[in-house]
Amino acid sequence: MKKREPISHIMTKTVVTANENDNLKNVVELLRKNTIRHIPIVRGKDVVGIISRTDINRLTFGALFEGQEGADEAILDMLTISQVMTSKPKTVSSDTIIRDLAEIFVKEDFHALPVVDNGQLKGIVTTTDVVKYFLEQYTN
Image 1 (cartoon, helix red, strand yellow):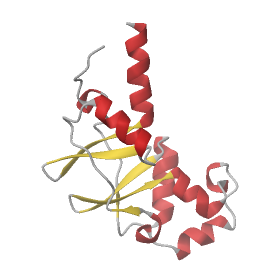
Image 2: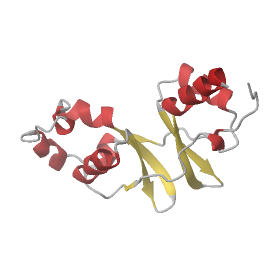
Image 3: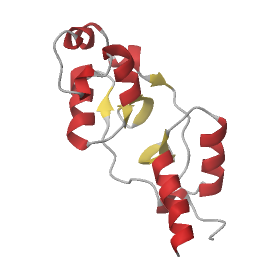
Image 4: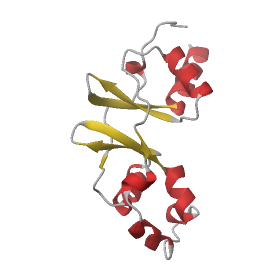
């Protein structure tokens, strides 16, 4: 097992983002269209928040991802991204060691973290990325 492997080897480098001034319907569409669970929210180049499918499901009882939109759409019209997102999310740098990242995920209630180097969003890394990495270590 490679003990000092950086997360740059497992992170997603092409990140789908939303602007803090977008509406929540756009965020839901991005989550659905890209089959992803987390979207960093940006203000220019700065990461100011993150929204997950779980955040949206808490508002809408999950119906938006089950194809039963209806009344839940009204909820999305009433709220802003800033009201729903986790503000000032913890971030990690691309040279963070995978093992250290795993410890962060175990100790804190995160399932995804934006990867930021020198103030710029470089990727996103998830618990799934970490589990896949560890599984690969067993198959090699």
